[in-house]
Image (tube, rainbow, N blue to C red; front, side, top):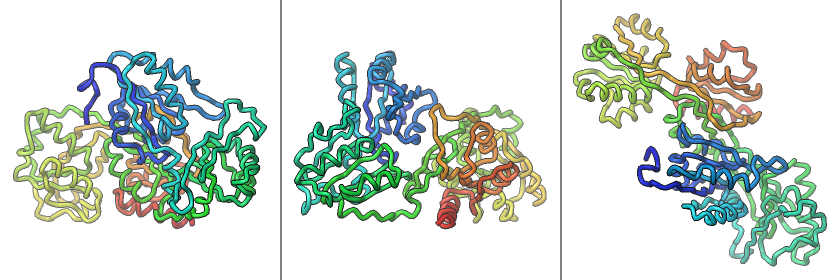
Length: 497
């Protein structure tokens, strides 16, 4: 990935990016590339927080979201922010929900930018118009039912509109209303006076489509207002009217759809976990709280590496900083010739393969405890252990009990910080902690609700959490990896059912 757009551009650039209907995985590849190299991101209220986690650490993130009755920024203020930051070859991303050019006021922002003769690019997004209905298997233009489709805003410039006759209803087989919850009763009243739309006409309200908080209310024009009130459907939601709605039959093929997890993890390691869990239907909110800095390593510590006969890697991070250590000292992986390499588990093994390294031993249980339990008897000599500054030093005792000398060499340290953007926790969230130090930092700096379930990646993290006076239900993964966490999520979900 390019570090910064300045490598290929000298002038400032504004990019309007469509974030899609809600699910962060529905963002376009091009949209993600711009987020990863942006200098400034002006984002809407409804964009998924995981999208913001892809920004660089020095990117300026500004919430300009418009919420009903509580606008963060007025449209002219957003224009002023764009003007303020348009300089010094900066890349400004304006991140908007859905498609920026469909009921997103992207046209107004584009007109403003063009009036200044500034550089601008538009990256389309999947609109809620099609994205939500398609995700539910609902064809808005089913060949046998509907030959026409119309998108309509349910919001009026004059929010005091009470007269249904002021609303023009187009002649179309399927109608999709955006932002229609607060005016639903007016819209329904107007539809019912049209001959085309009888009180038995199928319709549906879909709240927070494509994400874990999604709610679907299906009814007819005669019942939908009462259903909306009974179910407590609030904005944002789309309102679909037409015979095509009668074919709506939503089945959760993904067992974990509707499960929202907050993944506390370092930024570099989050992506693989997110992809795995997302494919199972999990709504993953990335919450990167950890970064790393390298530590100075003395010549005497390097001598321990040269004299060792075994080298132990317990994480991808350890591998990465070990390779950096070699590079800084004008060395390469040839120093490992003749040494036995131990990998703690599959993810570390896969990362080692990036550098052409294949471990000689990997325990069946991917943990440091697994290494101790299954340590090969013929692996004699000193074990060199490149580790974190906060690693549990008691592990050395476990190896001494095996009759094995260990040389611990801290080569990196974790740095903890909260994201620069807000993440609101829900009562039903499942929080995943992947280290005890990380859990200590989060719990010391954030308030979590007692109803949130906590999953610890392994026994060390679990024991640290159990020392706290938490009222939350706490589970521990059988194996400290994403597959172990996935199995624990299934277990938690089944218990809830």
